[in-house]
Image (cartoon, rainbow, N blue to C red; front, side, top):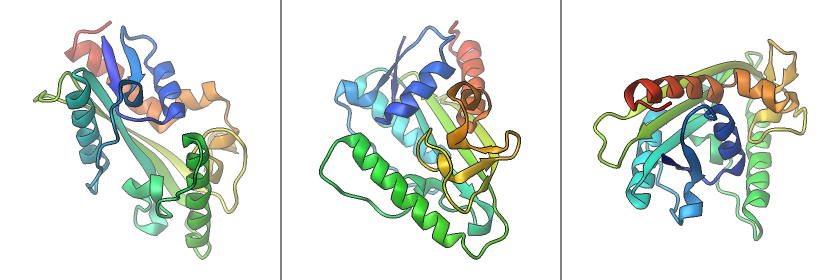
Length: 209
């Protein structure tokens, strides 16, 4: 089965391909099929993920998988939340997509550091909501959600990962997410938790694998 990922984030595609390797699906990025980005106007991860999955399924004519994820910080009332990807506003530069993403990540992290400066409560979590549709009008979307309990650091640590990974601490491993090996991250992350649930759902409901 071809499964279109409603994202053009290359690192997210690599992560999800590894996490769903046991299923008989070919996961392809929507950009490879000339599918544009969907609007994400909602205030919850599940609503945005569903909108993205429907958009990708409609445009491609294939089954679709969408991930809406972000960092929720207790001291900030759940922010950045669904605005995590563009917390500091849209960064615009002339260059490749990954260069733009790196600049956006840096701006988002800088704003989070500033807004957390006066807070002693550093509790936070990464949240990942996965939604899968067999087709655009599928009345039974598969929905899986993972939460990964973390703490916000006062300065970045590590060079791996993407997004807020250098700025969040993993208490169980005494390192930042950016300092985790890829295999370790794929075993314990919010996306890993959600993907394991999704694999079970696809096997049980879609009869895959």
